[in-house]
Structure formats: C-alpha cells, structure tokens
Image: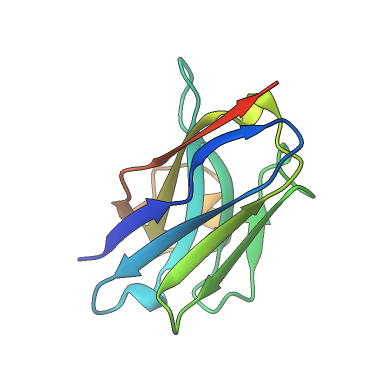
Length: 126
C-alpha cells in the first residue's frame, strides 16, 4: 500500500509560480513511477507530468512543457511539481499518482495508476 499526500496548492495570479509537493509513504513507494494529473471544473482528469522511480526519466504533457518541472527526492519520500508562468487555464485540482509501470506509460492516461492522492487545488486568477 502506498499513501500519497499533496500540498502546496493555493490562489496565485497569472504569471506567478507555485511548487506542489507530494509526500509518499509505504514499504516500496520509492520504487514506483510517480506523476501529476489535474482535473479542471467540468473536465476530465488529464495527465500533467511523470517521473521514473530513479528520477532519470520524465514526461510532460504538451500544454505544460517548458513551464512545469517534475522532480523527486526519494531520501525525503517527496515528489515535486514546480509550476511557473501560471495561466488561468492551469486552474484545477492537482492529483499525485503512483504507478508500478513506467513514467512514459503514465503519460498515456490514468488507467495504469495504482494509487492516488486526494488532490490539492490550484486557482490562477487573471
């Protein structure tokens, strides 16, 4: 069993930055690929970014590439999402996810996700 707890969401103006964190725990949690998904009001949950268990491989959706950076520190059992140049369309609940599969496979969608966090809300004002 892997537990995921997100933090760092909030209200920010367009153009601003945030850093989301996901604390993970569980006996083998550091061996999982991990990632972020988001769900905007009235829309389906979508992939944002993923990172391999070692941190050596990352994947991003086209809509966030160049603005978002995913990283992880297995010694601290924490994954991060640095979000820069925020846009109003980035407003969503951001979910942390863990998968026994690969970071690349997480980019294909949420079917292969084994564990989810409860989410943290990011609101971007224009």
